[in-house]
Image 1: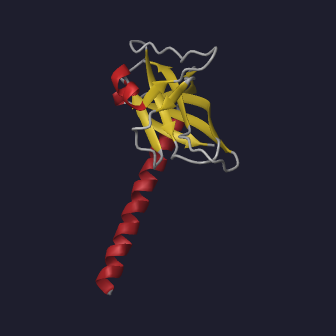
Image 2: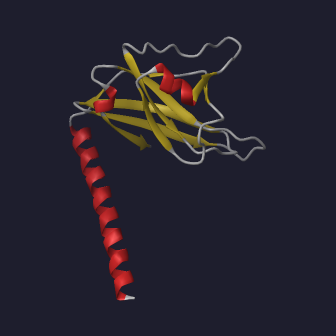
Image 3: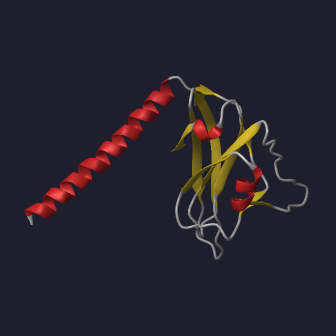
Length: 156
């Protein structure tokens, strides 16, 4: 019993240390961050062959990876937002599949050297008979290699 308590205590301490490291990294990134312009991606949907059961935070730096998750939505009078992959990359947050109409709205994007902070808001409606995968995606200017960035996703 003492061994089990000791092991559980060590696991809890390790998890808390990881959370503190992430919090301190976020505080450090936030310190020098400045707002940047972004382009909200519209008229896309999350493909039905993508895993929908958990929150996903994604960065795309090429068309192939993006197309593996998103498809263009054919809407009257609205074309999908055009992405220039040579000059831009995409940051996206996907919420788990839900039967509540849900709007995920990008609020602000801030950037500091090596970091991007993506602030978004989630508004949920009443239950419906259909399901959807809520998401928000924004295109950012490619000032550095997106794979070298640490991206923080903050729900307000």
